[in-house]
Amino acid sequence: MSLAQLLQWNLSLFILILSRWAGMIILAPVFGARGVPTLIRLSLAGCFTVVVYPLVFATNPTIPSEMLPYVAVVIKEVLVGLVIGYVIYLLTAILQGAGQLIDFQMGFTMGAAIDPVYGAQSPMMGNFQMVLATMLLLSTNAHHYLIAAMVKSYAFIPLNPSNLPIDYHFFVELVAHVFSLSIQMGLPVFGALVVSDIGVGLLMRTAPQFNIFSVVFPVKVIFGLIILFLSVSFFGEAVSHLFKMNMTWILNLFQGWKQ
Image (cartoon, rainbow, N blue to C red; front, side):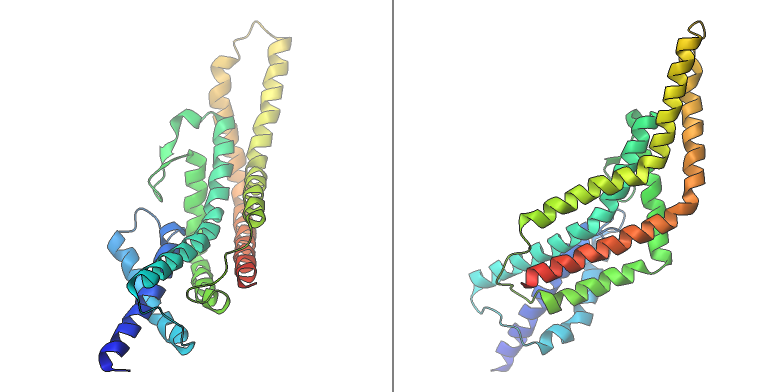
């Protein structure tokens, strides 16, 4: 192999590794936040690629020499990164779903704010929970486990994988888990507000001459914020449990892809 061919092969391998990391960073929380400049995201992907490059190089992967097959492999690697990033993103979806449920019961649905992380319209309580969870994950170095999971992906999913990921049943179950966990996360506040609504309804029936609805909305907001404040002490343990489940989903994805 000539020097030019050697340089071309190494550059081709670098681009393939970069493609997978770029796909993951697009969707993964923290790394893919809209507030993070594009140049920083590309720099992160490049730094991770430089670190992982010797590990992938040692496996001596087969890289197509023709243009069209190589472009197809690049697209495939981007899709692999997007699938991994999507599974990681489900942690964010759970928190936002719980926030949507709480906002609906507290009456904040009409006042949805712009998500500072992804720049889209999202529930206020979802924003609060997502920012709090992000700080918890960063303070406990949980993002290091996400990086380690991406590095481990090359042991299960080599460059240019010949098979498809787990069948659609796995992803259907993931969506079901997201809905279930979102309800569980938002149920303490949601349930307390439902009980308060029942109490207000009974009060309206016993004393219809009082205009309860003129004061019930601010009272519901204050009551919901109190319940949310009391549940913050358990929030860290809940986020830790969600993160462990998220890592389990990633491992199941890798193992199913390898088969």
